[in-house]
Image 1 (tube, chains in turn orange, blue):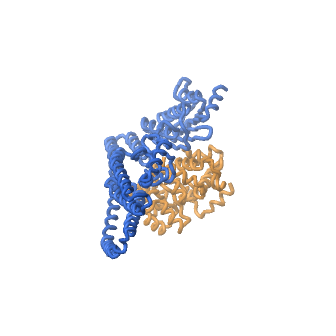
Image 2 (tube, rainbow over the protein chains, first blue to last red):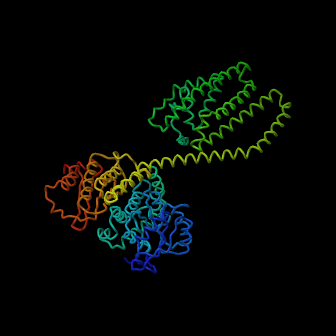
Image 3 (spheres, rainbow over the protein chains, first blue to last red):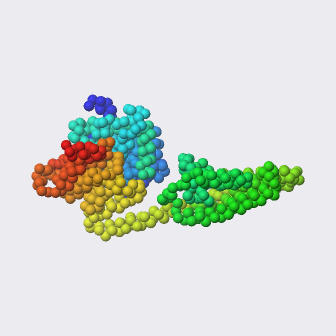
Length: 228
Length: 409
């Protein structure tokens, strides 16, 4: 697993006990305070925002490790926050958090640069785990997101434009399939006889493909899902 | 609704929107232009007699459109269109009669004066048709961009025809010289009035746009309000009454959440024809009965058949078992449709059990899951151990040959 270390050359790793500094962006104040309460001491909440402009401002000022980002926001949505913040601060990590089931929302925000997507029904502990994971530079997929990705990359007649980016490897599919079945990373690792770190590498690589692939099926597929 | 002009439909005689035999309407739809243009052209041709022949020939050679169920036109629009049909038909007949009369009066297709009169009249007809109250109402209420473009094109054509007709008529009568002073005066006057009135008209148009947008928004809001009132408020009331029973509260909230989601994201409602919605529906039913949240993720889809229906019944049994005995607060269901097989996984993180300790005669697992899958040519695996949760894995080949082969072998 030597190559994994090269990717993870970070100054701080939060899995070792450092507490990530987090900004919560959501237009429902009730929800923000609820998340704050559920996370408790696991993270340090350094700021909150309720719309795109104030989010960009708060994030720029506080320079957090991670932003918990709602997909639907007044002023352009989560994608707009990603666009404006990542242009200036590419090191800040985003974890998208939404009630939306719509494929184009999920795929849109991940392609916009979020390193993970979880639904708002997630428990406080799971959310804290996800935050630590994303803050460490890994990717976090909910079962639903894994399903969407499998669907989007599923075999089509059209040959891939860039085989490196347009196809998932057998192993990556296997990992995603287990996540879609409701397995946690640790359980996936045990099931496939690989280390948790390797599972993380596979998921990060899927995330990279999802973000960089120009496969037009990705967008066409998302549109089709919406029309159905 | 009518934005399909780009993909030319097959040439048929139109069933709706027709005046006589549907020839003009069908041809217009095929060419993607306004039927009025076709009708006027046919009529112009008819002055010499050719148009009638063309029409009759097309009527016999072009197949009639097959009547389609539910083409999307609401009954209100339909009846309005019918009402307009007759008046339009009368207008066309009147116009044809007038043209025939002029033809006789001026004696010959080659008299240019006749053509200027024809131009003027055609332009007039187009412009007057724009002022039809029904059409105006339609134009103001819906299909904004599309309607406006057509309106502008028609108005432009109408004005051009009238101007050509009038000037040509005057020129031909050698009255243009005399009329020039008067025309100059009229133009100046119109330009002046235009300058004064233009801002006011633009204001009116903007106001109308604003009004229309407001109306659409209000309609949407009313629909949303009605929906929220019917379902969400109702559920919230129930939740308040059952506040002492957390399980029931959760069940109500989940049911409502699912209803709202399917309403917002419009999942396919037809649960009988393909696997993915059917699996979601089965999960929803089990969840409603037993009150344990079930998360469903589905990849791919394919049409249902008998064996897949059996698989869903087995999956249902697995979900029911997990809800009843696992003692967990969430169940994950994953369905995947592959090229050759359909897989369903039902997983819980509950207590689990010792499979060997289950008595032979207990129907739940053996009969409803393992046996059922076996009978239909599929397979089932149960992975469980005390304290480690349970996962039921179901697999059904998609190609019937494979199923039969397995049964015989």
